[in-house]
Image 1: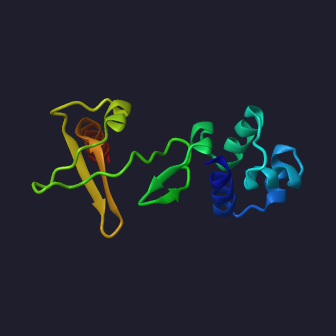
Image 2: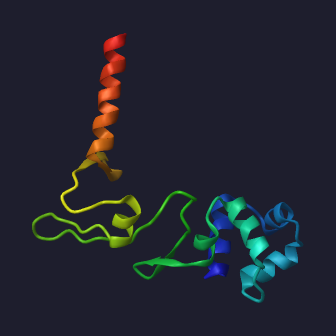
Amino acid sequence: MLRENLIMLRNINGFSQEQVAEKIGISRQAYAKWESGKTVPDIEKCSLLAEVYGVTIDSLIKTSKFKGKVVPPAPEGKNIWGSVTLNERGQIVIPKVARDHFGLSEGQRLILMSADGEGFVLIPAEWFEQRLALLSQIAAEK
């Protein structure tokens, strides 16, 4: 798990093993052993690695998979909640862990927004309506 994430994150960020090792104050050989799975970093080094890569320690040491392929850890504050399936009525079920994280409850209204060809996003209707009212107020003042 950790070794795959270290390799992916280093490559995604365009770092060499030597560059990462220098950033956290170890030798390139020590870092190479982590990527090979021969050894693992202590918690303090994990914290430094998470900082270098902009991820949480939790996401650094856990591996997520999608369709059998390892998914790189998401940047801190970003999340991959899992996949959902659209049913015959066009409905999806948001994973419980995501509902709990965002405090979503039955009957809550969400706004669906999209960018053509790029996907879509759901946001709480209250948040959207507050921002829309603020924009209307600013436009009226000008």
